[in-house]
Every structure is written in structure tokens, then in C-alpha cells.
Length: 73
Image 1 (tube, one colour):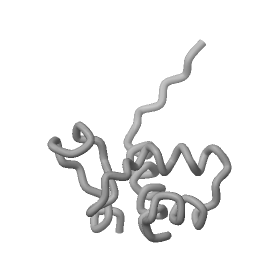
Image 2 (tube, helix red, strand yellow):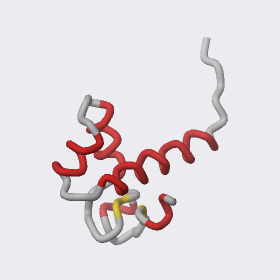
Image 3 (cartoon, helix red, strand yellow):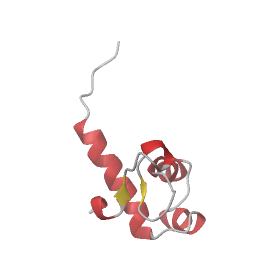
Image 4 (cartoon, one colour):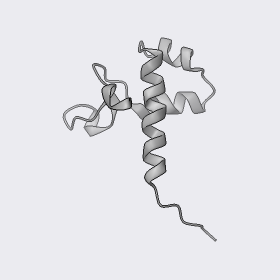
């Protein structure tokens, strides 16, 4: 569960969600994946566990699932 690996602290990285025990923001992880890096490459690049990368994906999925999507013309 992502709650065990992701934290939000207003005193760290301006309150952006990060991997617990690091200063690695979730958005950087997601951007790296979107840019074509593999889960293993991201984990190695930011010195975090594969489970941390997967937690970032899960966190993002939960956020998107709560969004109210509107159609734009």
C-alpha cells in the first residue's frame, strides 16, 4: 500500500508527496517513467526500492481515480 511509502510533509519539498525517508518527489518518479525509464532504472537512478516506484504509481492512480473528468470542446 502506498501509504506506507509515500508521505506529505509541508516542511519537505514544499509539501509535495515524496518517498518516505528521502527527498524524492512522486512527480519526478512518474515523469521519469513517462519519459521511458523502466521501474528498475528509476529505482536505481534515485536510490529507492522498486516497491517505492510502484507505490508512486499507485498513489497517482488513486489521485486520478478521484478526479471528475470533464469533456472539453
